[in-house]
Amino acid sequence: MDGALSIVQGMSKQSWDDEPMTAYLAFKVAIRIGDRELAERCLESVSKTADHIEYLGACIAESQKAEDIYCAISGLRKLHGNFKHQVPNKIHLPALFRCAIRLLNYLLEEPGDQEKKVEIVDELCCEFDAGEFTFIGILLVGAKFVEGGWLI
Amino acid sequence: MDELEWFSRNAYNLALKNTSNWDLRSVVRMLTACVEIISYFPSDYSVENMIDLSLKMLFSRFIISSALVSLARVQDHVEKRRADYQEMRGHVGKFDEELIDLLVESERAEGRHSGCLDLQSKMDMSRKLATLLVFDFEAAVALGQWDDLGGIVGMVKMVDREGEKAANVVVPFQAMADCLLRAASAAEGGGEGKLPGQGELFLSGSCYPSLGFLLVYPSLYCSFFVCGGMLTWCCGFAITVLYSTMRKLVNEVWVVEAFDAVKLAKYTRCLFQATLPLDDTLAMNLLEESCKKARELRDVSLSFTFYTLFWDRRYDFKLLRYPFSHKSALC
Image (tube, rainbow over all chains, first blue to last red; front, side, top):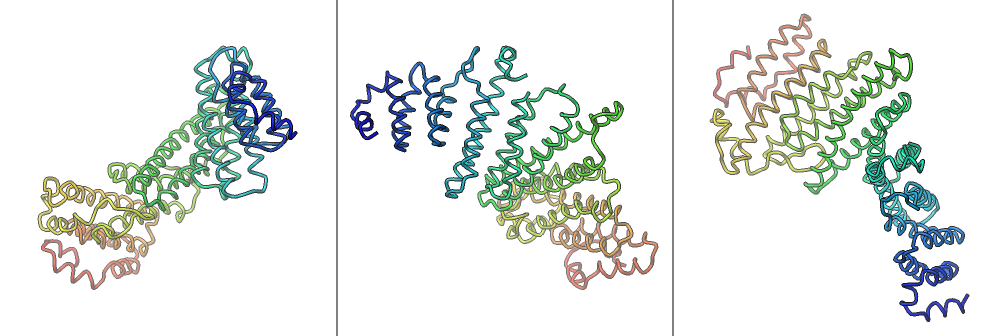
């Protein structure tokens, strides 16, 4: 793992920007050694690429496997940030919000610092606020979503 | 539909579970999101589910309003306090509309013998509406929305409280009267008193000198502008509204507690005390009406109690100071 880390740290920024696989592999290293700052940089790089949906999904799965809830939530947020209302859509937005809400709720129920919990409550409220607007967006796009069997 | 149900149910449950350990603003946010999500359900959703959703929405609005009034009362920042009261008024208005829709739908459902609201829930919602209208009244006083006060008193009167004890039915009127008395005594003190909770008043200290002017020239209420102009006009208008609203409240209490002369005398005396320094004509009109009410009491001992509770040696001194022609009412 030390060897992998030294390779990652030796890489230039440009080598990440157009290579989502590189950023993803660096993310896996970051998750294993518990370096959240490095993990966040990797997520940022991945989210800017054309295939961000698949890679961000992989990062989120990796975070959950390593039980790093904060990284998983960050990945979900980036997915939401890049979401475009279009049909068909690879992202099931309500499911995305549900995941984020469940993870935040899990963090709230764990014992921990009270100040941190206040921040988590705020983030939880933001997820529900954002989820509420999702329904407006979905209703505006309309009947095409019936085909996907998502809502009405 | 499952998605809407999931989000509305979880927002509702999370908020309710954490009302005692979360910041109140977070509880308000969560329940507001719940209410907004429920509003996306189509109107032709199944009847049983719609009643359940409507009750959830009403209960959410009740908690939101209660939380906002608590936040407003302890808020030092004037604009934030006004915003909280205004937002709360919005929720109370919606509660009233949605309750009417629910009761209408429930009556239709009774005809179909399915999906109607049970009596216990109807009574509970009526009590909640009465409570919310008291908060609405407090907010209207705090925001200086005088035109709405009479309407709110009327709405409380129309809330169906059948089967409840008189002592419970009269509570909203007492609470509103209390709110008005605090506002009136704050005005008498020239802006030094408090509205419900903390906060500035609808009358500021700068208009206190004008009050003395108005007592001598009451006919100039509507057109005179003296040191703080608009506030002076507001003084005159607010006093009249205070008085007329207070009278409505005392009348409502009289209807419910017609045989409790002791309580009625106390309320009337409070109104008289509050009004006399601000407008002697209104105060003496009240005195005449009170004497008439006392004479209507058939029980002589109750009538005597009314007079003795109402009268006070302090009034002798105050009455001598004012030039008016109503002294005969004292006999």
